[in-house]
Structure formats: C-alpha cells, structure tokens
Length: 536
Image (cartoon, rainbow, N blue to C red; front, side, top):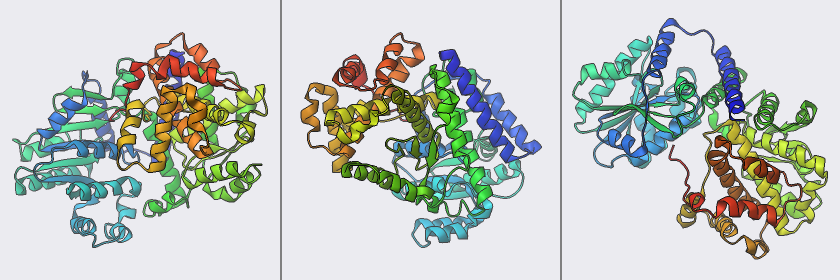
C-alpha cells in the first residue's frame, strides 16, 4: 500500500505541475538558470534540524531570507510563525519583493492608516506590478503593525540579476542606516539560493551574518521522501529548508491563480471580494473533485466503480439559493438550522440524503476532505440507504457517532492527498481551552471533546441537550485528531491494525463499541495525549 501511495503522490504532482507550467508559458533562459541553481542545491547533503536550531540561527543573524512561492499562502503563514518567535530586541524590518522601491512612501502611509486598503493597492499599482493573491500579502502589514516592524520595498524593473542587485543595495542601505537592526527578506524562492541575492548583499556588507530559509523544495521532497520525516532540515548551520507541504499543493495554488486571472483581469486587486464569497476559485472544480476521489480509492484499495464516483454534484456560493432550498426540505427544524449555520461559518459539507456537496473554498484540503465524505457515503449507502436518517430521528450519541466516523475517514482521505496537513491534537485542544481568546461556545465544545475521550462511558450525560452544531464540532475535533494520529503512526508503517481500523471506519450503524475501540486503542494512550500540532 505504501508503494501505491508514493506512486499516487507522484501522479498528482506530475498532473499539477504539468498543468501549472502549461498555464505559465515559456520560461526565459535566465529564469531556467535560476531554477537550475535551486535544483543543484537540492543535491547537497541535508540533515534533520529542529525549531530551536532555526531560531538560534535567525536570532544571531542580521538578514533572514525566506523563499516565497507567490501563489501559495503557506509561504506567508510560515513568515508569521517565524516573526512570532523572533527576539523582541532592536529595530526590525520586513523586506518585500511585491512592492516597487519607488512606492516606499505608500507603504509607510498605509501602515500609519493614512491610506485605505484599496487606495494603497491603487497607489502601488498592484494590479499591474504584481497581481498575485493580495489576501496572502496583506497579512504582512497586519504583522508589521502588531510587531512594530518597518516594511521595506525591494522590487525594481530589469532582469532577475538586475533586480537582485537593486534589492541588495536597499537591504545594505537599511542595515547601514539602522545599526543593530535585523531584516527579514521575503523574496521569490529562486532568488534566495546562496549565489543569487544573498551573494549580492554579501559583496556590499561582508561582515553581516545571514540565515537562508527555503520552503517546500520539490527535488528535496522526492529525493528524500523515505527519510524526511519531520519538517525542518539544514544544508548548513545557516541554511535551512521548511518542508511543510507536499510539492503538488503549491502547484494547485498556482493553477487556481491562473484560472481566475484569465477569467477576471482585476482578480488580485479585488481579492477581498473573493473572501466575501462573490467569486469562485476554480472553473474545473468537478473535474478536480472526481480526480481526488479516484486517487483516494486507488491509494486505499477501495473498490468503487467510476459511475458511483461520478454520481455527485458540487455547489459553491453561486448556487446558494439552490443549496438553501435543498436544506429546507429536511423534516426537522434543528437539522435545517444546523446546515444553515455551516454555510454562515464558511464550512463545506455533504447535503443530507443526497450526493450533493457544498464547498465554500476549492482548496486541495477541502476538496479531498469532501471526496473522502463522498467515498464514505457511497460505501455506507450500499449497506443501508437510510443511514443518514439518524440526524433527524437518532439519539444524541448516534448523531455523534455518525459525525465522528464521517469526519475521521474524510480527514484521513485528505491526509492521503496532503500528508503534511495538520490539525489540533490533544495538547492543542487543552491549550485552546485555557486560552482567553477562545470563544466561549468553542471552548465548551472543546471541553466536551476531551470529556468524550477521557470518560466515553458518560456519553449520554455529556451530550444531553447539546445542539447538533455542538455535537458536530466535538465529533469533528476528535475525528480529525484520531485520523491524523492513525495516518502518522500506523498507516505509513503498514500496521496490521489498519485492516480492522478501516472496517470500523465503515460501520454502517456505529455504536458505543465501535467508538470505544478508537478510544481504548489510541485516544487514552500517553503517546496520543502528548501529541501537538507541528509549528510548521
């Protein structure tokens, strides 16, 4: 099965990369050389590292280079995680490639609140000069305000080399004018290879120390797929790579960007409109959904015909009237209210008693999760066409078991497609319960989740008078963390337990015995309760 999974992942990668490259068009000779330099780097020896080593190198450096894949929001998320752990002493700045240096005044005015978001985008001519998803880069300004960082514009016109030279002068100038300062440079992933932008800066200020942080290097992933088990690695004491996502996911983000750019030339300027559900993310959603479902069944050895897999309809915000109408056909008001709450909160789900799905965002994680739900429902429907009626007529515990097993398999299926996907684990749930910023309703549902793990025999009392929304939230929290644990600890190691686990996942009328199997086998173990979500 493991060999089949590797083959599956390679097929997904080849499909996504080929499609992305076809949309991008012909590369210049200079860009090909930059790409070749990165591939050469990946042939070097790499060692396992950790977060402590990374932060130690960062805090001893004046310049930190972080590679950016422009359509992939994971690049910016990792930037935020690093900034959160930086030393609080001294002046700091974030150098950005996506704003031309002539617009430094616009950046300063925007951070001070003297320009609105739309005025800022127009001021820097974002639609013509950059155009990559604004929602990703907007986060940088939020971080700059929170941590009191200066944002330095580093971009310019010219060849790749000429742009590196200009950026190096701006970096050097900032450090010379601000003695003891530190600058985090977010630049395209090909530019931060050691003999590119870092070398240009070193020629100007040779005594300054730097750390280079690459992200999600394709060749490194495939070359060391069997041995790279963590997420932080190092080429040297000052050059690292964060392998936080499989390579096909970043190409998926690139495809979505190109597809929308072709449909709407102002896509990126008005990215915030998309966040308010006025646009869709993909014109090929149904095709991608079917492809993911097919890959999942192949990887897990599940026998489902193509006709069965093709029996679905996928809807987004453009069909909300129809989705609302279908939900209104449910025979219980509390069920109708539950699904309307899911829509309001931007959740994706299977419409009850149908093969229809509502998807709020066409990301790989959401699509593969829904594909898992589709597969799970096909199998259960063969055994009992009325299996979903439990939501209307079932007892509280039966509703919980329904959502728990559905969520567990769906999340497991999404891990097959994206092995780097992560969710809150036991320690994270404990932390969120204690955190002051956790919403009271969410805290209550998280407390219920841990109670169900620690005292499952009290399930009737724990779930008494709980809303369907609360039951679903707790069931999904537990289902996701159990699936993540099983995938990492058992599935990758070809554990003989997997056959029984799968049989339990597909229990048509799950009961306490089925749930208790997962509680006793996994959830109440010390190893499970010590688990927490990865930093990257």
